[in-house]
Image (cartoon, rainbow, N blue to C red; front, side):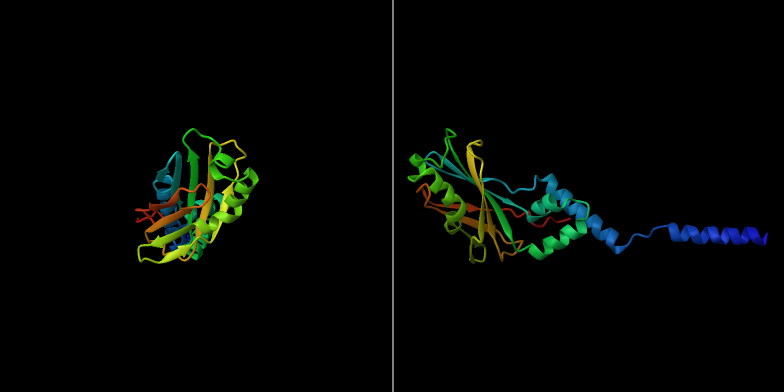
Length: 200
């Protein structure tokens, strides 16, 4: 009988040890999964804001930083991804596209007034100074970098990624573009929604 009681006690201790209690990390991980699921469900991007000038469409879309973090790091360790987001949450990334109505190549001489290679260089290195952001608190933030996504005349549009730093993640912004490349004037894009933080 004593042996049976000892066996029963050992079994109870083993059972208690093997039962996993929900820890704070499990709750945090679940909360992070919910947040990223909500971002994915809304398509990761804000609404597209388009301005038309003559026969060229200029479109701006804000993309949450979490999208790029998950794309680069994967979704196996969401706590690590979320901590990187917390370190960089004052950064903003805007996808900006240029497209002509008849899908002609916009970097040609007839649109830019310059040689094709010079237009590509401008998209790669000179476009940064043409953009800035105005926050709802009326702060002006200069563009901190541009990445030109070359499409080698395959896609009917030109696309750049614009980077801005030091903006509160809940702040609504207006993107201002002064077009020196196509000479279409100043265009403004008012972002009315922010998807950088999703309420649970």
